[in-house]
Every structure is written in C-alpha cells, then in structure tokens.
Image (cartoon, helix red, strand yellow):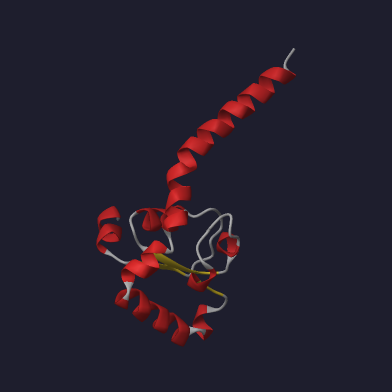
Length: 114
C-alpha cells in the first residue's frame, strides 16, 4: 500500500470516516494530495486537517468540481502538494504528542494517588 501511495499523487476517500482515519494520514505522509467528503471525522478540521477545497459535501452531486480539481492537481502537483505540508507536519508530530500526553496523564494520576 505504501508503494502505491509513494507512486501516486492523489488519494480519494469518500467513505464514512468513522474516526481519525489512518489511511488518509498515510497517504498524505507519503506525499499524496487527499480528497475527502465531509462525513464523520472528515468534517472536522482537527481530525482531517486538509484545506476545505479538498473536501466535498456531496461528491455524487459535485462530479464536475471533483474532475476539475483532479485535473488541476495532475497539472500542477507541486502547488497542491505544498498545501498539505501542514497536515504532514501534524502527522509527523503525532507520536511525540502522544508520548507527551501519556507522561502528563501518568503525572496527573500519580498526584491523585496518596
């Protein structure tokens, strides 16, 4: 899967996004531009922090806009890829943030135990 993402330019996911999705993050981390709908967690910037121009309310009714975006990404990939830099930085920092949050949690719990 990683090899496909490294070779690709675009990852499209119009699924239900039941939680903070792993595959869109992997696609972005491997350099793909990510296109989603606005269902589930994809509707929330904190869970899927990609520019709004890459999120669609109702993809089945926005095929012309999606087609135009796909063509524009292929025509000027570097411009679009750069718009995902912030998302890639967030992804790269998640492990460190998790470790820091875990230490804070343990410290808080230890203070509560007499």
